[in-house]
Length: 542
Ligand code: NAP
Image 1 (tube, rainbow, N blue to C red):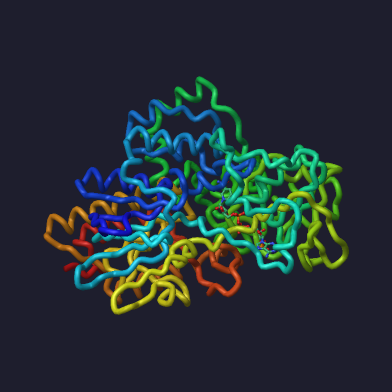
Image 2: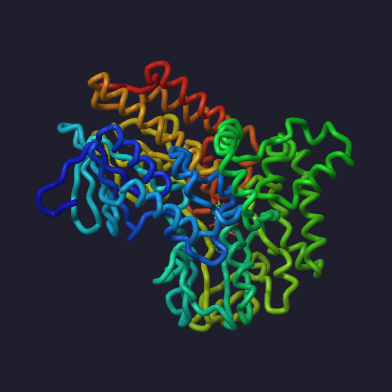
């Protein structure tokens, strides 16, 4: 971008994470001039930022790989079944190098605003620095979890120790992971017990002098079942990529796990218990996605699996009072994305770890010395906020996006996102929101749903070019129907009834609405294919 002559491209992509890199690769292949604008100093998106200790995949490593290059698949060897963040970041850098992607990426540039110029049929993007660039197509590839959310607690600015959100864990200047922030032997506090909190807690507990976990609501966590990939397993993985990706295409969440089609209520108690026992240790989402299909739709079925996991927690945590605090009472198993863990519950048997239930004793303020709850002050050297994200919409609406007739996207979405297929919103021509709201972004193995989105958008742009069309946006009717369909599909599940980042209810003041497509990837894939086969039905093309 430039402050003087405004550069013109065919497409601007915002974000150089898993999705943006692949979109760049595909559009360049199509012959388009493309500029990727990235706030970070390197590629990797979520894997660039989240450098906290313990950060790793919850998808099987081999199912997370890009599938588009056989050569890449064969030359890259994942070392663990659930790759740790430094290895994943190294992988994405390898991809950027191999396909010479960096030359089209501008780093350290945060987009502030994007305005549609109807006369020129083009988007003008403005960075925080004031630099501007223009393109016919504007494509957001921001990831569903990239707008970190700090809580608003009085006195936060007064803390004299080290404090940061997990998303902003300082980088190791010499490597791909996080810096050593000196946790060893120190008094550490962590606020938040979602998937991030769980990963960082189990790691920090190993060396901290004391660890105080401030938990508002517990989550249902199950074992990850990670381990190194042996040479034999490596050879098997490399020989079976086509089968792995074919399996992901037909599974609900684009993972290697598939639900048992029976109802949890139609089998005997012994059979049910035996299946739960088999799936509980992992690997990965075995229990969440591999148990009976109705655990996420039928309250009685869900009660059975919740009771099973509660018993496991009671077995693993020695102090019954602490065990009860760790068992969710306000939502059933799997109705929020399940944090995967390695000895997480056992952490609470350690003498250096204290669990503070902040619903019983709320945090009143952050002091210069630590955290003051309603019953005592916890003195800390390091305070880690694992408090999550303004998910799915936050990273998009933090950019001041103005469409036709001065319409602001954040105003249009004030009562919840409105899109067609999760990919376009009426009034914002040629703006595509990859892995965005009402798409399949987050109930999914992200690279698989990103590939689906990217390939579909690339085909759409090719179609427009072949038909001398320069402008696309959904009809209002198609958008209204999709918004209703997304809500209807979600309402048939228990997920929509649970407070979580899926519903936006984790963000104070955010309208509660189910933010993503909950009908599974095979159905979403079919809908996209059908729309394309019907000449991009539902879109107004000109
Ligand atoms: P999250 O699930 O939203 O968890 C945030 C935690 O912070 C919750 O425990 C929440 O409590 C707590 N919290 C938020 N505001 C608070 C406040 N003001 N005071 C006290 N506590 C507060 O966020 P996350 O843990 O970052 O995970 C988000 C998603 O990222 C996951 O669901 C997953 O999809 C993805 N992720 C994946 C992996 C992986 O394994 N690959 C790892 C990490 C994250 P409440 O529950 O009471 O709101």
